[in-house]
Amino acid sequence: VDANQAKLLMDDSFSRSLNGGTDRVVLEPERPVPCWQEGQVTICVATGVVCRNAQQTAGGG
Image (cartoon, rainbow, N blue to C red; front, side, top):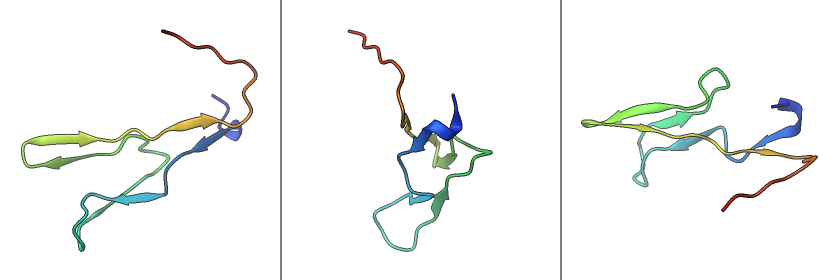
């Protein structure tokens, strides 16, 4: 993947809750899939990277 031809479809951070005063998860290039614990559950979020200059596309069923 050519990083110069990619675009990230997320802000640089996001809130973990709709309630005010909660922690924000910061997206860092060194840690592309941030994870955290919510009780006994581990939650991970993968960002959406999109090519800005596609040379060829393909689709599948």
